[in-house]
Structure formats: structure tokens, C-alpha cells
Length: 462
Image 1 (cartoon, one colour):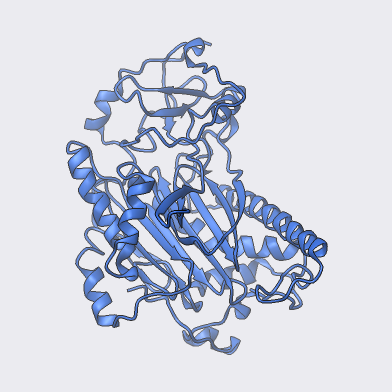
Image 2 (cartoon, rainbow, N blue to C red):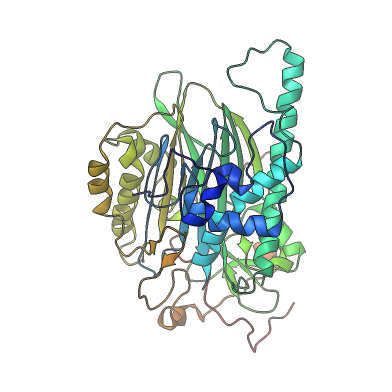
């Protein structure tokens, strides 16, 4: 599994014969090397050869420092995507990401973002400077603390701008795609770059990342690294309302606030930020990522990125306990998904399980020494239960399914015709300046997007 893993590289002349190609062949330069201007054709070539890049995995499997696993839910095509890319731009740099699609073409959006966003992030980072004056060898001795702090601040700023610029470019590219309809389809994104002991993160939507760390008593604790960007967060709701969008929950799912058009009960998006979803981009839904930087310590053990199908049924602490108690590190992601599947059956027996995607990144850089045969047996028991199979070129061979993941069928949608539009006064939430909001408490066990008419005959009054 994880058939895209390779530790070897070859010359650029191997592009045409199907052999592995090195990152340099794709225009991906290491720190300190002279950069060349990338053209659109270069970008197309890079996307075409993504599956041949060494140390990049995007299907169920493991790498030197991580394991990843996804399992289709009970709603249709698996719309989750994930990636781990080691030696991302240098030997000590790793890129990780989880993408949760929604809407009729959400699975295509998630895969497109998975493939294109890392390249855009590289390009954006390099455009901010050639890197030779900003990258610091983690083993190098620091002589001038003031100078070192200035360099660290510069790198922090450089990564922040790179995340902002690449996310903007990604959404712009999705809008211009002629063969991919993103009007009512989109994807979340939670991405991180681990560079030495520095962790840089950018994210939109309601997927989540946590850090497992040991406290003073040597007990493992969970530290949430991201915020679930849902429409009911006061800051998000205020922005949407200022843009004439509406935020309210349906009567029969009062715990799930959604984004609606000003005069139509559509699309009912259950997140405040996403790629795509251009039907509501003018009404407050944005693709601008939240950015954060964290310096890792020896007490930090591993990071878990997962789509909301996991967090809907498992707490941060439960996830840390499951991963840390896994019999082997390479099986941790699979065991976590299996645990989430069991919890779905127990907690919500009448609901359809959501897709689940997990990335477990172990910060000490070590994995188990187990044979490939054992790992294949470990994963094959649950890896492709209804999953779409992805070929070496990065494309899926879709299974025969009646409908996709996040759009309700006509029968299910009958119960949602009783839409109650609450008064704006009832929507307002009084928040004190010192009140904290993290989006942790709500449990979302329904679809991200409600299938409703794009334009209804009845208009709501102001």
C-alpha cells in the first residue's frame, strides 16, 4: 500500500519513460539553489508526474515518519483526500494535508487541491526569497541570538505569506477550471509544513489537527492546533452576515448552523471557509486560511490530521489514546479510522457514517521495522471497503454508486422542506471580549451540504 513511496530519484531524462522523477525535475528547488521561473506547461508537467515524486504518498500506507489511511463512509463516493510529502523542499521538511470534499463534485475538488496546493505553496514560498538567506540548518550553532530571531521572524512571515498566496491561487484556479464545476462543490483543507522543529500550518473548513505531547507528569495530553471554522463562530457569522449571507440551523438539526444565500434556502453549507463553493463566495464564505506557527519540543510526540468524520465521534483525548496505544505505528491511522467507524455505529446507529481520512506524523522520525507483507495484510482487511481505487497517475477508478457523499437523496430531503428562517435578532450572539471560541463542542453528524434548489420560487423577505 502507499505505492507512491520511493527513496530513489532519477534524472530529468526519465520523464518520458515512466521512471521516478526527482523534485528538481518538477521545478521544485532546494534551499539555496537558483530558482527558475515556472511556466504553465511546467505546472502541467509537474501535476502529470506527481505520482512519481519520491517520498510522496497519497493512498493508504506508510512512509518513513508517518502513516495515512482513509475509508469511505456510507453516503457514496469517498470525498476525502490526504497526502504526506517527505523531503518536500529539503531533507528536513515534510508537508502533510487532509482535504474533505463536499457537494456533487467534492471528491474531484479534494483531489485537485491535494495535488495542486503543495506545488503552489512551494512556488509561493520561493517567490518570497531564494531561501539561501532564510533557511537555517537545525544542527547549526547559533552565535548571534538577535540575528537568529530576526531570521526566524523572516521565515515565519515568509511562510505565512506563502500560505495566504497559495490558498488564494488555488481557489482562483478552481474557479477557472472548465471541466470541474465548483459552483456548489468544494473542499476543506488542513495543511502543515514541518521544517526542523518548526511547524507552520494553514487551514480552512472543519477538519482538525491535534498534537500529542507529554506534560510535566509524563502523561500524554492532546493539544488542539486548529479551530473548526464553522458558521456559528461569532467572527465567521458576522462576516457572512455583513456580506448578506444568512446563518441558521434547520429545525430538525438545531446543532448544525449552515450558510444560506440571501433569498434562497440553498446551499446550506456547514462551514464558513472552503475552496470552491462559488455560489456563496460573494456572501461571506472565503478561502483565506488561518495561519499558525509553533516550535516543537522533545515532549511533542506526534500530530494527527483528520477530517470531521473522525472528530464527529471521537474527542481529541480519545484520538491521542488510540494512536499512542496502537500495536505498531504504521497501523495507527487505520486503527483510528476503525475506532471511528465503531463509534459511528454506537452513537449514531440511524445516521450514515461520514468518510474518514487520517494522517499520523511521528515527530521523532521513527517508524516500525515490520515487513511489507505484514503491513499489506494489516491494511488490506479494511482499506478498500467501498473505497475508490486510485491508480498510479493519481486518478480514481470510481465504483458504481447511486449518489455521492454529501448530497441528500430526494427521500432524505423531504424532511428538510420544513425550513424555519429565524429572525436575525434571534441569530445574534452576545460575546464578551474575553470569551474563547474553538468550535470544539458541537457534534456534526450530518452532511456538509444540503441538496436544495439552487434558486427557489419563494423569496424570503429581508
